Image (cartoon, rainbow, N blue to C red):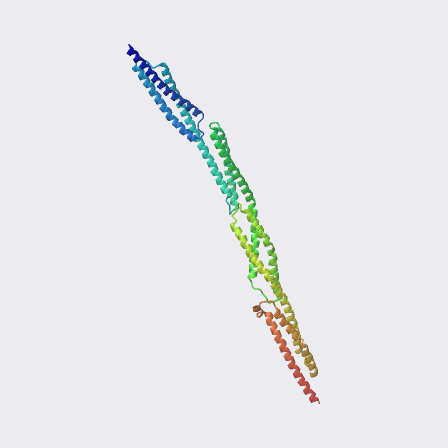
Length: 440
């Protein structure tokens, strides 16, 4: 009897110990369930991390269900072996925890589906944001691109404006969708809102660039026209000036020299506007540079400035030379005409028929008087020589000038006339002497 009592006490203790172990395992599962519920109420902000955690929890809840089911089966078999039923309290605990596991598994699966849906929406929003950003950056890049055709650029500007309006519509719709999305996930909606804020700033920047470019293009045509007008004037002047300075100077007469002096003077006066035009052209280039390819234009203005400066310097150097040459040639022409007139008068006197009608004595007297007057040719010849020597004309040109040939011819003619007059006087003197002797 005593042994039966001892054996019964031992069985009771063992039963209590086993039941405590079962209760401990059940409590562990209950604790896990409670922690999981708390997590589901306040999951991770990062969607990918949240999905990984939920998938991990699904694995854990499956393992816990299997463990509880196995535990319930083991307890059922145990008490069947003892020819008794599972204690109601233990049965109730196992049923409660099993039902709680089913419930929490459903919650995890629901949360996973919600999170996956949110991730999908977030990805779609991200793709839309990136798509709009790409469109805006492409538009901005085109707006900053310079053109060689103003008319074509205006057409492209209109198309870009339409694309910009389309981006604005997409942006407004996206912002409204994100605000609706905030009801599902506030933290993610805030992140998206921040990205949309940056996108809106990019959109505003693109609008400002479009407005700036439109304003520049609206005035670019007139600036380009003004540039081309000034360019045409300078090119025409350069062409005329180039022909003038590379042409041969005609040194033949003072009138020709004066005409050439006036031509150079006119060319220099016309060039007075060139410096201002070049500065104005540079200003037009600076204005156009934001929308128009102006590298070649800038180089063109530099080259025009250098070339026109060279031509102006040549003209400035030649102007006083031409003026001095014209003055010297005028003086030379005056002296030459005076010598020619004196020679013509002497020639007319020497060959006058009336002189032959006079007596020998009177003829001699007239010829002697003429010879004395012809002495005045010497200063005139000398004046011509001095003027020719003083000509500020290249030496290699002087010898080939017709007027210099005329001067030489007149000098020779003066010498010949003087010699002829002397001979005639000597002949007349001899004739008068012979006549006198015969008279005596």
